[in-house]
Length: 96
Image 1: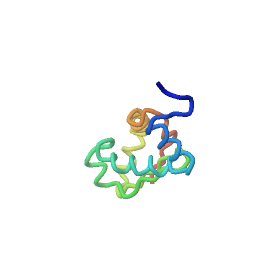
Image 2: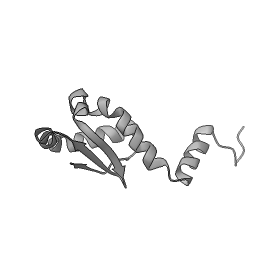
Image 3: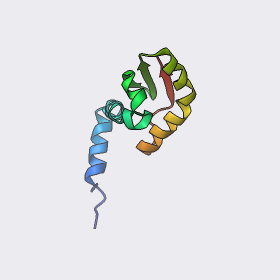
Image 4: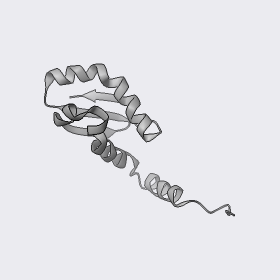
């Protein structure tokens, strides 16, 4: 039986993460660590940086042709990331 002020450990930790403003940084680190699975090995090899700021994911790659190809993959990648996190983490993707 749960009291009104009782919460699960998951709820308590999520509350702390949100209270201290760590959610975005944790999401950025999670995306960076999963980038190989999300985008594929070839794209991950040419990715220089992955940054998340205010729901805008910035991907820096070292190849202009790959950057052009990624422009066509923006929406599927955003959808895949948001599905993986089960919430809307990324609203926009910028390629550099």
